[in-house]
Length: 188
Image (cartoon, rainbow, N blue to C red; front, side):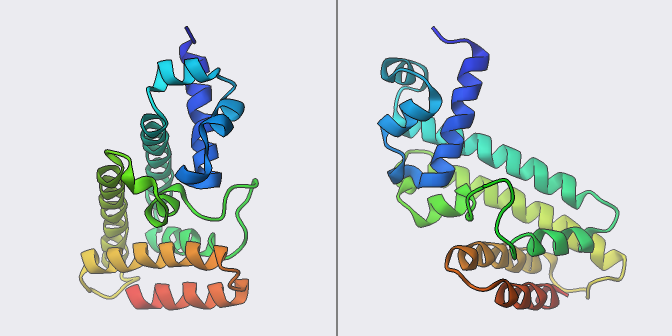
């Protein structure tokens, strides 16, 4: 039997592993090695690789929406949106993977896991709501034109995903900076 703190640590390690390698690249043996759990314990606690992946994805999504919400709650929403987009110009800090787990899953094979598609849809809806709120606040402050905030939020989210993709496809930082500027101009 493992403790709750051991379980949470194993979940954190599994999340990092899936983030780095994707669902298909994270074999059960790699997960056993990274979590420190014996194979039997891994299955006893998480039932299957798919169930572990869904739980790790849930954990990632909750952390990400908390980060985005905290950033966008600042007084200057336009600056927060700019910083969010600009953060995708340079390589990620702290040896984090270049692509977010949600996008990696969308582009990979993790969609076959029951519940994953729905979880990603829910995550995207929450991100869109946060972006829409920030855009409305920026419009009220006179920083953005009065355009459909829902559509502008969708454009911003797609732009961020594109910037993540550009970062893994070796687009130059200068090119990504130009894309950030175009993205911000397009929502304004």
